[in-house]
Length: 453
Image 1 (tube, one colour):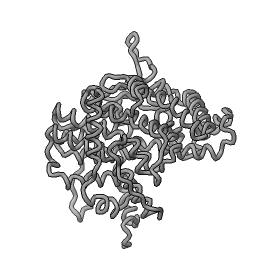
Image 2 (cartoon, helix red, strand yellow):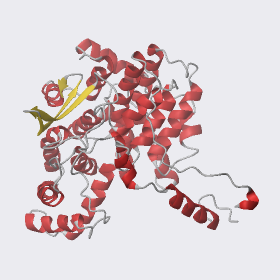
Image 3 (cartoon, rainbow, N blue to C red):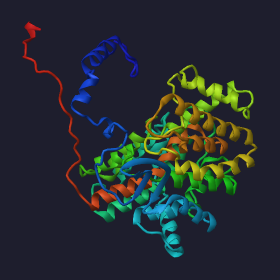
Image 4 (cartoon, rainbow, N blue to C red):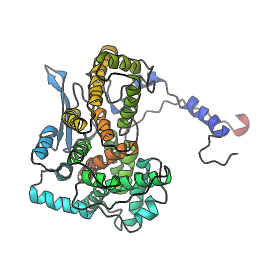
């Protein structure tokens, strides 16, 4: 036998064939037993599994008893996301901390409340003594999401009240994690950059007077410099990713794990594992990789016909990853439009002008237009197809010159706010442990002795 930890030795390959042969379920059985695969009905609508007051997604309205697609709407605690964004932009302050306050506590803060809350987050941005040296630096991971999961679970060991699930203690733990996620993400990346890419090591301490977005850029960049537009766009990205209904995969994971009575660190680590997946939080990475290939093959970014021809190749599984998917297009819920993409798009254009990336912005617009047209023509979906926020968030991160390895962790930095709100809501309204049913379709067998097999 070989000794390498990661090698697929012949025995594993042989056993894997058994898994494939004996693990395949006849697709017709899902129809026979009316199984809601992915907890969705045949039209893709999620099966109702709980109630929440934290956020709401609207993509349809009922007219004469029929569901009619509408421009998407997203509400945080009953407030329209576009109104919230316009509010903090017009008021000229960063929005993520205000939105965190709203999602956790159910009401918008006044100036004094927001000031105190910002000070509390600043206070909690300190890691335990030697944590950076002993935990982050000594075992750098090639994937920052896995590093985050390990670090969150390790923080359990430093918490004297780790298993206390009282609301006040869980809130304290959640606020600490919200404050520390940017620190853990950036330091984990710096450790990776140093040990795996042989780059210089920079460890900047977070500043208590800076916003979450500002601190992220301050800690990440060697010279700690950033423009106000860069910080504002990153702040807006965090706001738009902070929460998205109780039914998304990682938030539902938070509810499921919380319902078992486990600790905060285990629940958030489970949510991180869900978010890492390319079907969830990792989608914006695929968008950037797809556009890299488009830019290599399209000569004139302003030539719609040329762009459309290459998008057609992607849909025909002749280009990019041969899956036939145009990443950044379509959404499980939204039909005519994703409100987050609509809010983001105008400000993205401003950043593209500051960065001299107007041509690339034109390319993104042409890909969006072409994909919307071609997918609607070819797929005949039951709902419309539109750009989702991943199409533009990846572009923003690339313009900010952020490393690809931090794209999904940035999603986590934002979404830990939503996870925290839902964990607390689950604890305030305790239910039985969440336990979906699975129908067993395996035929019965008579046992045979070892000599009879």
